[in-house]
Image 1: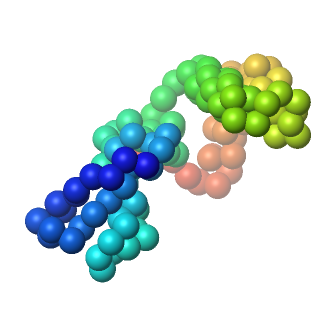
Image 2 (image 1 turned 180 degrees about the horizontal axis):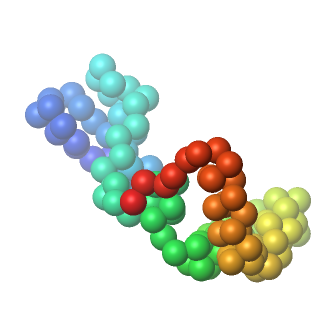
Length: 121
């Protein structure tokens, strides 16, 4: 983790380390906030339910497939091929490649209607 000074309150004792693999996310390593995490990423692009709900459903399997492939790549680089986790990722990858977004949209609409819920725009 790269050490950096983060001046949220202009405090000289507020030290944060960048979290590997999470650009823009920092963990405090000194002072009153030691152990706390600060996420400085653009919230409009964060991987969360609200942002995923705003996307076209056709985009979601592609994002999932890309994420699984990257996880596999990093896992193999760190631990070698053939681990149990890699096998689990392969199962999830096969499922993601078969997702029928039209059917998923219809199923979701039924559930939302039955629950009297709506998604925020």
